[in-house]
Length: 253
Image (tube, rainbow, N blue to C red; front, side, top):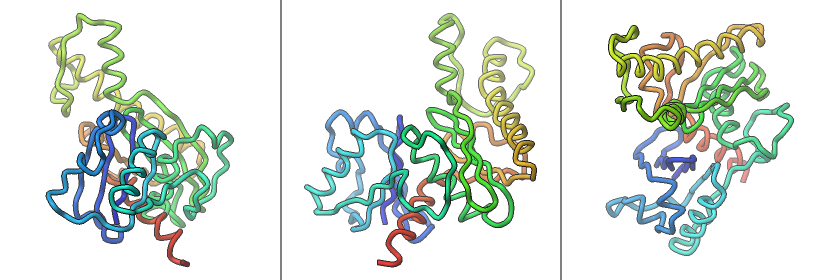
């Protein structure tokens, strides 16, 4: 199976056997939107494309281009996950028309792989935006918070204060900076870790029971050392969720 997670910045493509990732590719969402053939962007070195393809996306135009390439190039019709797709969870979210499907997919993956029947779950997904979402022990998606992602916040700061120096987006070495670059790195990176820890703690208070917290997204590794040891790290939670959802929707067929 090929699981495709279309984000605002990158498209993550995982070749999977059940929940195991065998090959991973990432391509630029903008390259896909520019008209480049998606199958060429994948650069598979002659490897065959699976005949089962599942997609979730926050960019409709990219979804259309990808599906068209699969249909016209390989005769494959991808299974596109929407907010109405059965995922083995429920939701009480009040504006489903504006809910990013990736948030539901992450919540479903958290429930099925980690927290279901044991504890509430909090899912932190660090991408263009950082989302912090809650799901109950019984599998009800409640919602959460959307904040500017680590890179988005940093770039916004540079746009407003252009004389600040550029910094490397990498783990913090000196929390108490003694140069402007060190101070900026501490604020951008350790500050984002503190934001995540604080939001998770506040949401845990509202849930009334200690949650299991799962962190995902490519930027999570940058703040990993600043997060509690009991947080679950799963960089590829979304594509694992897509595999589970595909199975839920095809197992009876």
